[in-house]
Amino acid sequence: MIAPSTDFPTFAKAVRSLAATPAYHYRKHPSIVSRTEHDGRTLYSRFARVDRPLDDRSIREHLAGIQTLALPLTYAGEGSGIVFIYDGTSPERFVHLFEHLMHQQRITDYTVFRGRSETIRLLILPCSLQPITSLYAFARELSASLEEALPRSWKILPDPSLPEGWNILTIPYG
Image (cartoon, rainbow, N blue to C red; front, side, top):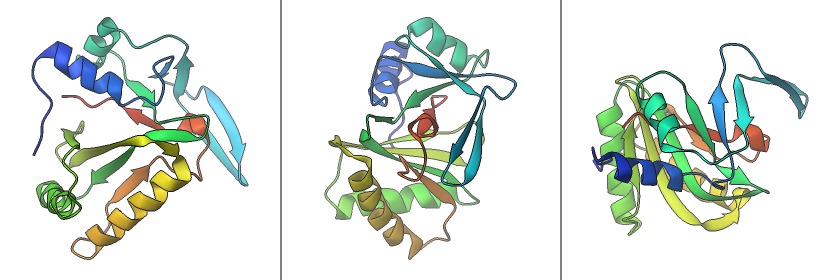
């Protein structure tokens, strides 16, 4: 399992590289801050957009649990990475299967982060900038391969069925 460095500057650089654009990030609030109608559904969000780049102080506060931050995975319909968010009973098995799949696909550039709880893993696969429909199609192929060996307990981002403000990733906790 590839883990982020305990060195803060290295971790901060890795976190910033997850964003589709460095121009803004999101901050979680205790109550709902926006409501959006999308494809016949009503979506509620507790994340508010902050129109400034993510700074080291904010990342340190996130790691300390003072605030929760998220990064945009898409910008203008394009993205540069795929994220699998696993929340199931076998996180280590899922990571092992993912690593095996990446080896079969000859993909070496990916990162695995531990989530807030013991069962959550974030698997991040950087890609070249492309439309999110292309990213999602590739991610679904990978997901289908994983589903052959493990019951599906993950979601994939970015998801083209979600509006841009909902294709966000909470920053990992190290």
